[in-house]
Image 1 (cartoon, rainbow, N blue to C red):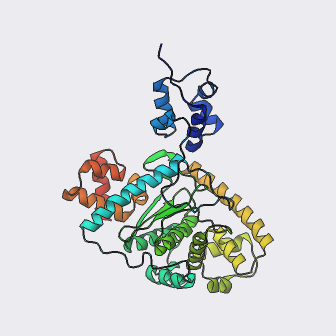
Image 2 (image 1 turned 180 degrees about the vertical axis):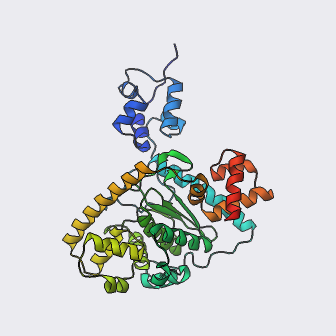
Image 3 (image 1 turned 120 degrees about the vertical axis):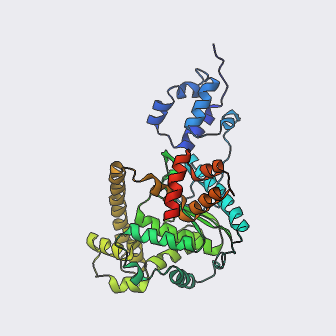
Length: 385
């Protein structure tokens, strides 16, 4: 008979909590869980290996006497209902580790290639008036009202902004999953994005599980962190009123870049209706939630009316996202992967591999690709884009 191993009960709870398992998932994926917790039986080493793999838990951590205190490797500026979020999930941690690895590789590549430092990184201070940075970002991105009118949808506007930000030298990655693992979905309620500030290789990650219109706000919010020269994990919550000073500053910059107050007052037709929310959202290429907050900021909506409208709109958007996820077919793998990795990063890895600067096995790992044929197809698309 195979001997069982001793595991502290609280470590089992810690593992399923950081993996985000529900009671139903525990019952389905670890049927002996409560027998182990109550120490009625002991798991075998093989069972513990499988449990660690299923919960994305480092195997050695399960043999500790108590759960380790895991902290984010980047400054945590998230709030949840204006309260500090207690513990990061395995999905969030692994996403940051993956992006840190990519950013670290790209920085070495950029230095070797003689790329200059980016002049705008770290030029802002929290004492800087947001309007000054708004003018700089609008000008450098060419995203005034006339320019954005050329984009029919939020998706078009978002892709255009990503391209322009990447042209500045910033790595931009947009994904709703951990790495290339489609079974590990990211939760926009946990975080909406993060920024890794660096003078040569800054990186912005946007949670692709969020709505496209919300992703635009997150993108500019994280760009504001880069302008400050600060790394951060954000929930980019436009309604937060007790966030850190930096989050509130980045919110103000993003809101004014995307929905200029003077233009909003000119455009508003005087009645806040669902049709008017949608019309303004389409015109400014932002979410209806951002529109509502800007209407409140402009004193065009009372606090009580804003709260009611915001709650209703959140419910409507969540229902829309659920329906969209249920109908999603996955799309073209190569185009999707390019969005997850970003054009700038993908091009650098492909060129480095084909020139002999980077071993192919390392290129596969950085790109989340397993087969050479897949790499070749991806590389051909990147080089042809």
